[in-house]
Image 1 (tube, rainbow, N blue to C red):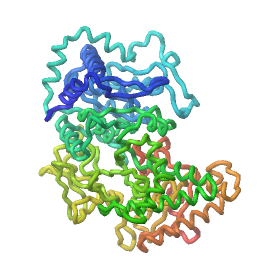
Image 2 (cartoon, rainbow, N blue to C red; image 1 turned 120 degrees about the horizontal axis):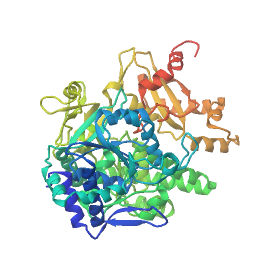
Image 3 (tube, one colour; image 1 turned 120 degrees about the vertical axis):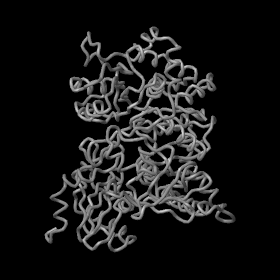
Image 4 (cartoon, helix red, strand yellow; image 1 turned 180 degrees about the horizontal axis):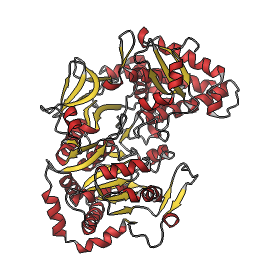
Length: 614
């Protein structure tokens, strides 16, 4: 087994020299880049970084969208002995400056003018950055930025004489001053203990922490995931998740190690078309993406006539029956098998075909996946394998398998991973993929990683009789009611969102007599509700405040409450006139609710829930 990521990269790109490894659509057609082309580019940029002054172990921050260029520059940084520090393109200027200074970044690589503009705004605050590079002269956005721009060029933001930030192609020009032997020496000096990346946590409770992961941790994680999911050269992986997230990084490296092709979709609005055209076999996703897919399919089915709607509902019902059997290791027989064949032909096979017709499985991570959604997709023949892990564990420590899965769990431990439960139910992990430490935070490192090598995850969980792990909540988010009941809010939130009308939910009630909730509504479902009642749809903010909409939501909450314990039920709620948003500080970059931030924002409303006047 390889000892470093560089060894994996060199071995695979040599083995796949003439085979397409990266597929993207920069223009009108899909294009492939072979292993040899990828290797040549990465080695050229690596020598260019060395010529620019990058030393062993120094950090390079990558502020870029998921793309082939991201993977190329990551390989280049590692080949040169550097450390990759990914940052979300959604980060605000202050956050970018803070991360760059905390990790002492020497260089920054940006995607396009939209990101370069952020760097220029805080350039004077960088303490160690020598130079920056960018991938694309022109930037294009699916949605306008705050200034209403969809397109931005470097000419519009850079003075002609600017030399601090330059096109990435200049690395290829500068590489001539560095010998191949010097690059080889850098790669050879790397060991399993060498840091390969700092990944900053989302900062739900304060400033983000820099998680230091070594080459050895990444290599162990890659080997364990590849073995558990049996990924190989015949696979193609659609990579639509941000590479700033550890899940996407690990998925990319698993593909590299196994020789699978990496496919880069153009964007969110073209995702379904891109999937259909490229026919991937594996699709990593977050639950929100799967929820959007479900909503789109249901909306299309409900837009037809009465017979079409009835056929759809009947077919899904049959598919759910088959799903229940398959979860028990059985296959349909007799009349059910015959009905299932018809249901597939008329309805169920259409969704897998829309996804290219070759999907072996989907991978879900980053947030809890509802059992209802997993079973609904399974009814269509789409298996979603949910896993669990943290940035601090180099992504997954448990995952469901193709031939052994339980919806509602996060699967079985990966090879080499030990799972234990503390007295209070906290999940403890001992794994070769665990972080080495938090960058320059010894006290917090000691609080998270104990002397026996157990990483304290902060998550509460249970292990069932078959060894499957169930995550019940975040330890720090547990609500203790005034009556002394311990309640996991995330489970209830996922339960509430099981109804199509509920878009987002935050359950509240720590030290209170009962639980309450802040809700937002799914706009597509809200529009369908309006159309069914012939109510003109004006704006979300206006429609969601209608009394009849409130009564509809109240009926949903009443129905959902019937499946909860009495102390878990939602007694009062409010429908907000806007969605929780990353740009407003309500969400982390991975879509998790910043509970303290939202609580502060809506403190008056939350307090009012517990007054007699509400």
